[in-house]
Image (cartoon, rainbow, N blue to C red; front, side, top):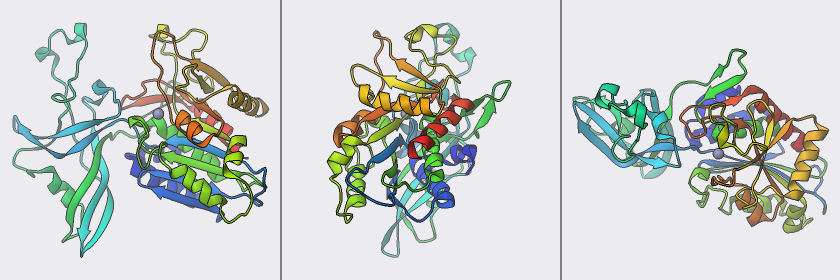
Length: 401
Ligand SMILES: [Zn+2]
């Protein structure tokens, strides 16, 4: 599957998992097993021979992104239009959701003929959250736009006189006689991914954090063949943007139970000692230096667009990178001519985090936090560099190879 097609199809974590499965189905041979848990997916390729010094080569990313979720009872009406009240998921940049063409998609759970079933849906209509005109908000350009997430983000979806309740639109997606029981539906940026920049050196798209990393891992995993004695593992977790402590998140038992089942029956190897000798790449996006705001970065650790894969370090351990895992990452880059740069947050600003520390602590696996540099992180429409994505694919390919 082409990269942009992957970005355009992955509009919810469930759709990301579907798109990953399509990519894997097209390219992976038989000795690969897949484990699915809602919006999370783990792929494991078993080596030719499992022995006591077999290792796990694990690459991790997350399938979710900040968004506006449709609430269970979302309906409102005012000024001749019907509105949908959302609940905030993660930390979206609110202003970026205004005046965009918004699609809706998600998972429906329903009963039909006494059986519970689910259906993945993607609506073909566009909604919108319009900005207030400058004439009605004098001073906005001087004072900045403040968005109250409770009152200012209701989405306009239809005119009064059309359907009364949004669940009627969802019900219409189901087979005749089905009873809609629950839904997990969210809004998304409907504009397709595009190249940007005068030399087409950039990528503009929604959801690049962290679909870019999912795609790099999936491409590299699908292209790799089986190894003599090491397992290759591609793990895609849901709910990173809300802290990972869910059934589908990196804080769950999902990865450990998959690794245990992959090892069971082989009669060889102790999982914990194998993990202690292994390496995980925790891949998530990194903040590139913004040309209009260079003071926001630590000047000696300011990654730039097009400068290569970013190694993320933090002494407060918001990232899992340590001296042991960093050394292995740097050697991998140097042996394969992959450019890399190092990020350290300013001491006067708090640092974000990733699934890396969670996985590293719970499995005891040395882990390095890395990612492609990007601008506009958590905007509805983000920006990366083509060359960095290629570097990331080469890096993960070398790791799995
Ligand atoms: Zn992320």
